Length: 526
Image 1 (tube, rainbow, N blue to C red):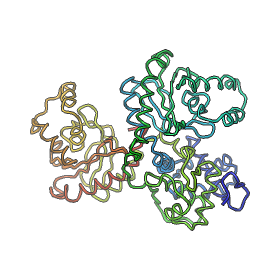
Image 2 (spheres, one colour; image 1 turned 180 degrees about the vertical axis):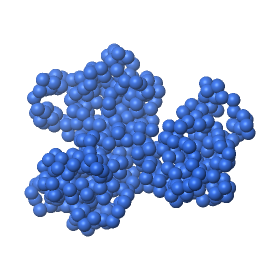
Image 3 (cartoon, rainbow, N blue to C red; image 1 turned 90 degrees about the horizontal axis):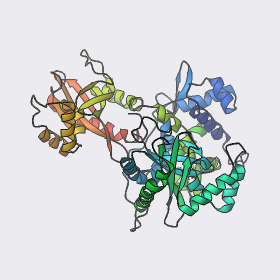
């Protein structure tokens, strides 16, 4: 079987229509505004007829949506980038150590990987700062201009590094000799600094993360505004923190036992097909994207037989699509298997900074509200209050006047009790004093109530916030099992018997919460 490098774009195994479909998806990813069919055709270099069919295909797959002003990306497109993040153990292994760095220094920390000429941010924990670099998971930048890039480029062979430098277009901001010198310093020192070279006002420092064979596979970095941190702090204070964090990440990935810790595998993310399959859907695009999204925690790398089985494709067809995706750089060959590359993050993950939890949650909340005939909400803890961030209601003669942004006392709501139950008692006590709140009216023994909620993993309140309103709530967790919000279903007590709340509503909430696991991505605007 030919390798991807040997496969010519004009060869019989190359799927041209898949390449054009991916070019349309990239066009959407690079534009924030909606695109007309004519604009899609111009950006992708195809005919208007072809552009319309590709846009309809992406809409059918749940990756794009259509409105009066044209087509734009839909939240479902994030599932493509998820394939890389879920199949690569690096982001989850690094995340707790990035969080610890942020708690220690109060600045943003990231994990990056190198692919061809660019550095991709695969994990990032942002510090609570007013001014920070506009970078999220999925962002890619030119490797030579960053501290992480110089560390990663230091892992290339001399020939590969010269190939990289010679491939860069000459410009006033790119001096090959300067870059070569900075990379050599990174190799010698074991760390690299970039002082306001990528973004004015931002300084950063990075260290390598190596596999058991000593190869550089990623980099950890801390970035800070130049007015807060001078270059000496990067070297003297941050490097001694980054190096142990890299070692702990390596130990989590490759423990001495040789068996990496198991990761919880959430339900696979699938794009919802809102309507019947149109006759204009382009099958090659559908099949190619099906392959990309098939990779996850349980399928980090697959051979052709496994891809064929997982995607329910004839092996001959799977072979053609895999070779095409590999030649385009979206898959890489690892022996006889294939795995996604960071390049797949460019297929829609640019949408992440523009999305809120409400955007992502809307379809699931609306479906659950219809199923239960209830109001379904998502809330987050804000001091001793619950702040509603998303809500959907089924038709009812009674209206509950709660909208996204509404704040209510946490201890008097099912969602609030779920979220409070996960906090240390001292934290709750401090929050109560800060809020000047005296818990009373049947909740004087809040600690006992929260202990019961913590043990059972859900909360039920009956007419505690408002007379006549019953609600049951469960936590919402991300892929790492961290609780980031809570979800509740509420009804008027006259319409639903008490027992239905735990016998019927609670299982439905739990099922939907399990579906949210892949939706609650790092970088999502809560």
